[in-house]
Image (tube, rainbow, N blue to C red; front, top):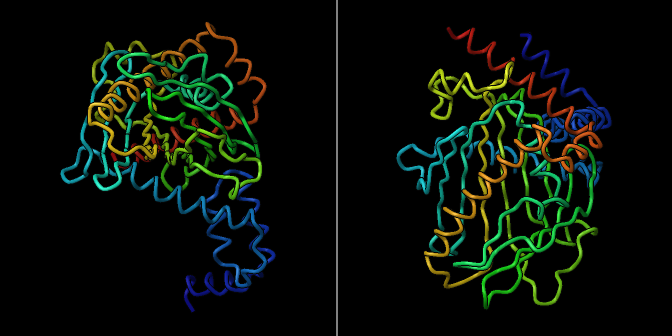
Length: 336
C-alpha cells in the first residue's frame, strides 16, 4: 500500500472528538482554514456547536475574499475600473464596480506601506471608539461623515463587533452598520494575513441591538489581505530615492482591500457614486495612512495606548508579519 493510502487510512481512523479538538487548537491560533478542514471531516455533524459552524462559515468567506484579492484588478475582463491613483511617499490605487441591477457599490484599494506602519495602521482601523478622531467628513457637496462608533463585543484576538453610524446627505436617513471582523492567519496557504468583515444583525449575535427608529442598516462586506510586496509588484518602490526613505530594517508590505456596500438607496446619481469612491474612499485611505504614521512616530498617544493595552493582538500581528516576510524572501530566493 502506498504512503498516500496509509495517510488517508490514518486520517479516516481519527475520531470526531479528536478532530474537533484539533480544529479548536487551530482556531485558537487564528488558523481558521486549517480548523475548518478538520471540522469538515467530522462524521457526526450533530457534534458541531455554534462556534464550530461559525468557523466553517468564516472559512468560506475568507477563501472567497482571498481569491478575489489575489486576482489582479488590471487584468482584461476583471470588471474593475481604476478610479484614482495617489503617488507620494506611499502609492495606492482606488478601483470601483457598480452592479447595475442593484446599484451595489464595489470598491477596491491596492496599497504599499513600510512594515513599521502595519501595526499602527491596523490600530487606527481597528479601534472603533477613536474613529471620530481621524475620519474625514464633508458638508459640501454632500453631507457625509461618522456620527458615532462603538465597540459592542470582543471575542478574542482580532474578533470583534463594531457599530458605526454615518450622517447622510439631506433627505437620506442616517445609515448604520454592524461590522463583525475576524483576523485569520493564512500564511501557510497564501503567505498572508487576512482580515474579513461582514455586516450582521441581532439574529447573528444577541449583542447587536435592533436598528433605531429612522436609521437604515447598511449591508457591508470587506476583505483585507496583507502580504509581503514582491519587488516586481507595480506598487513596490522603484527608485533608489524612494527605498532610501524607508526606516532602517523596514520591508515593503502590500495591502489589498475589497469592499462591497449596499446602502439601500435607489435612484442615486452617478455623481454621488463617483464622489463616494474617488473622494471619500481615497481620502479616508490617505487619511488613515497619515494618522498611522503619526501614531508610529509618537505624535498621537491614544492609539499607541491601545496598542500597549492590546499587546496580545498587536504583538501577534508583528510576529506573524515578520514570519510572513521571511517566508516570501525564502521562496523568492529559491526561485532565483
